[in-house]
Image (tube, rainbow, N blue to C red; front, side, top):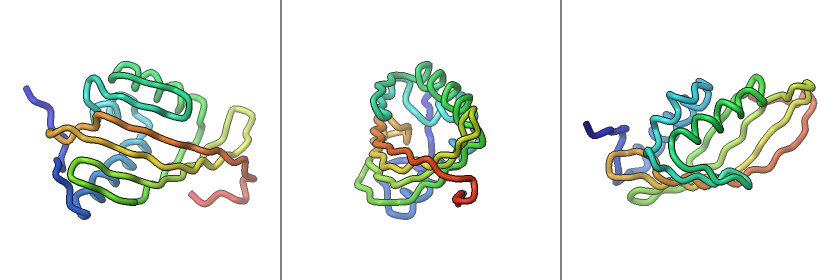
Amino acid sequence: MIEKKLPIPPFTEETAKQKIQAAEDGWNSKDPIKVSKAYTVDSEWRNRDQFINGREEIQAFLANKWDEEIDYKLKKEYWAHTDNRIAVRFEYEYRDKDNQWWRAYGNENWEFDENGLMKKRFASINDLAIDVSERRL
């Protein structure tokens, strides 16, 4: 059975924004298995200084991420798109186990296969310690 994740390429601005909203909703669910199903079984990631390959590694990475990043909340914004690629700007907030709040800013470049599954995700991310009173999300 062929997996499909709508919308599929080629993207319009409208369908690119739908894909971005679906990704935001998925990541905010904090469900590693659910989120991993948006990616090809052999998906390639660069996340900061980590290289992650395939759904099993994605699931392990996300489970660890959301264990460490408590009260995680993400917001993604459309930046640009082409036929099968989307660029987004994002920010998210979380607190660590010492109750220090953080805001992470970054950009992601996504590439999709013909079935709408993400086959490549390259993320550049910077973290900023914030006071709880500075939270926006």
